[in-house]
Length: 366
Image (tube, rainbow, N blue to C red; front, side):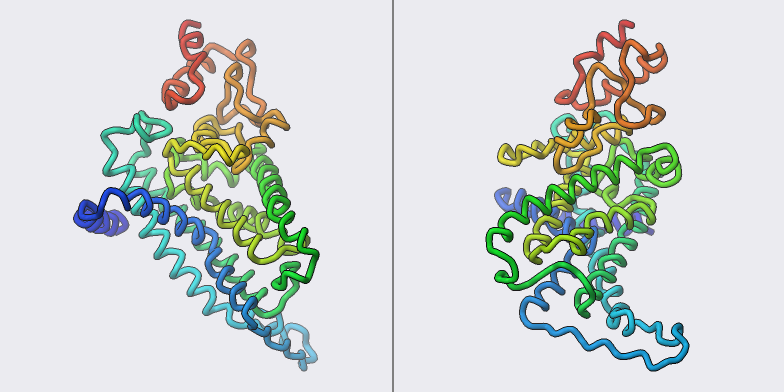
């Protein structure tokens, strides 16, 4: 059923795409990534709630519990979750509609129309997911999207109904200098927390039980961005949402940083070799995270590779990495077995020529 829907959609795109001026096509691709970025974690519904609060929406008064038995008062209203069912349905309908249409568009644009020239755009030009892997990746992606849309619906409902958070809406609530400082502060805290949460999920116990699902796809596509175990993607979402509860942040800065994070998550999981803009000196190219999928326990950072440089988990060309070498430090070439060296050599041959391939010939000779 999924494949039939995608085929119909791809045929629709092929019919109408060629009618568009070539000058607008790159803009459409960028817009598609942006739209997918604000829906993969349900950010759009949080943005809507923030706009409502900014322009005068008043939270309803919490009804007092008149019940003698505490569990009789455990209603949605009591927990400031009134309106959650509608928020949940809306969040999921919009999330899945955009995820399927925009994600399908990106898959079609790269993996179908440019399938015959992967060396021009693909991080791993000679490696493709099988049809079974694509189907599995899509289904896990659906499970992950359902989880994050639910999480965002709950957070948005709580904020809308006046539950505790440190987010604010009036610029004069704190000194104006803090408004400008909180942008980099929020980004750095979120990204550093995410680095450690990701790294913790690469420890043997958590990796084998949860995170390994995400690493079934050594050549990820945009469907991979939500293809996680539901428990893991929920905890990662809470890590990204944590500044809402301990750091005073204006809604514009928090939302903008979140959208930037998710936008780049699409790029990093796309499998497309995308060079980071020069002005974003902190950001690695998309091949950085693609290498993480290929070699597993290395390159844990997302939007900032400095954390890997600081903690020694940045991929080194004089080390080997694979699924059985944990903790991100790899193994020195001098300590590797012959079988490990052969496996490493084959992996490096599957890399984009722009990535680390300097030691391939040495490994093959040995």
